[in-house]
Length: 254
Length: 288
Image (cartoon, rainbow over all chains, first blue to last red):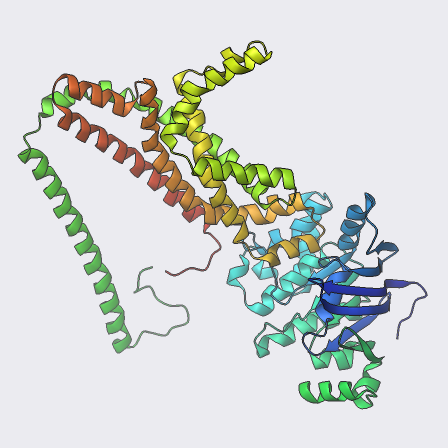
């Protein structure tokens, strides 16, 4: 396991309450080190996606602190720098969604250079060079000028990963990236995620893809009812789960 | 498009498949033929009706240039008014979707007030009532305001039409923006885009596709509603036709002629609309 002294992502006592009554996250703590791959498991509705979306503030945490690569934001504070800090955190985190969310009015290449050009203000030429490298890396060079609607789900998700990587993020968040895919297309996406992990990317993934959790993750966390009930190495979680709920959950999905 | 293009990798189309393909092709050409025939019959019917009515074509030809000269006003008013309407619609839609209470309430009352009153009343408001407001303000102590608010007919017409259509189109634009899935906003935000960048780069270009057909509709309606400026004595298309028709007691000829001119103008617009729509639909998977 690769360990580094300062955590890349540090979540402290995060709560999320929806609509004043629905307590989805109940005081979550999490530290993820640089280069670490963490997989979050849990039944649907347990709050995994919400936690992931709190990290880049697509969801505003109701309480607690989120820190990414040294930028910390408190849920309560509301000063002028807050908006900029949120944008900074988003620039440092890439996110892949269950439904890909590629921009349908742009070609594959345009999708990938959109972030660097619009957000980072890069020159188009420079952005294209790196975008082509990424396209090559995810194996979709020949789809460069296609629109997303012409691509299969697996291809779309790989483009979405390339789009996130174009921002040179420090952390990648995967929110059930293979759940919307036909079974035969899951492999190509997991393969890309695995290579990303091997190249030292810090990854937090919510996924039901057991191969990824078992063989690629450094650490697996089980969430239930808005908090962790168990965490450990994949070997420990899969072979020797302590908690009854963990055993129940694993029995369901394995 | 053509059914008998050779498919890649196919060694040859089996005869029974070819038969089905031929049937499909035959059906298509039959449909096209019937369509053309239907149109031809319709046109013959219209032309015969015109002849039976005993229209004075010489009279029509004589006055055509004079009537057509009014189309400049029609286009000027419609074009400037639709430009104004588009600007108001975008600003209005952003207001309707805004969380800023002042901006939002202004946009909401604008739409409600304008949609809730007749265009005819609004035209007179701009033309006849506004100077009176100016007079009151002038007496209140703002010098020169009455002159400023006393609008000539054409600007008053453009403002009336633009503001009115802007209110209707606000709702069109708002609906278009709201039709874009939340995932698009989330993806843009996740990349680090600001709200403005998200709207400009991701949401609006996609909303535009949804908005174009209803906006073209509005534009076509506007071309015809531009005749309302004749109420203020502007010598545009319909005003000229009505005047000439009345004076020579040949209103039928003039009205039919002016109707045709409007129709042709709208057909041109419809053609442009189809071009734009096709351009925007590129990269789309669609029903063929």
